[in-house]
Image (cartoon, rainbow, N blue to C red; front, side, top):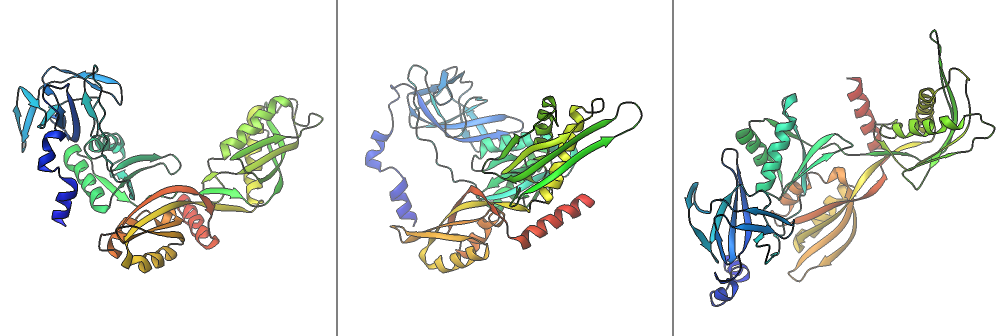
Length: 413
């Protein structure tokens, strides 16, 4: 295996001169590693592909169209930085505090821009929610993760707007544990890693016809708003129409009704999830000459929304992922059996030239967050996979009931 790897990836000695640019050519260098030290700052390591890297050279990033000046140029020997006057083509050098270059970028001259092929990093396939052990640590976590991400672009950071969680994705649990320990040692912030919440959605399967009435009398001006709204499924995320005749709801209050409904979409009636694929038709109502105002009609619309959702057969939707698993042929049966247990659906298989198999499947996202660990265990670490969001599907009622019960218990506490 070692000799095959040498043959496949390392340059042939006879070709070495043709692969290396000449020191007389214009400067170009490839940034292959970034080190972020809390004390020294950012250090970029690069291989000079052509020309010479010298101090005070104005360099250019053709990808981002950014220019900056090279500070000191040095070689690294362990943690020791040895300052040098120049780094020639074929050699490896380092520079600190480069603002506009990250791992995979090409350093060149504005007069002769060059872009080398970027490093093809594996996509994250193991996800965990990261939270600070103290309430005031969010900013430290964000800063620390951004800096660590410059060092290691193989992990991702994403703030899930729906679940309000910061989710970190990597290649496995060991990588995420190392990130957590670096946050503690380098940035003095303690974190917990937990299974991320699933961003479920809510919609309706039936139709309903409801009244939402808000009436409040408390000395002086009161509040009065009354709406009749039909709710039904829609292909669009949210549709609002009105069929008001005879001024039962004055025109100037109709936008307030729509706004009241839209504000309810972020929190459904089953488990507080985002509501999608719903149509609301305002067709009747009543108002009061003195007590009616926009706020009263917004509140009336929100009352109608809650009642209308409950009466229109509300259901939970769960995110479904597209999954591609690459495995040696002998593990095919185990993988297919395991995917069925995860409520997955096998779509097909493709035999590869090296004898491995690519299994194509769809599976609920909730079942895939920790799949990297289980796949490693089932295939003696010889299996790999990629996962990406595909669509939302209706969730089985027995599982939906558990999600709803957990949500209610959490909110009671």
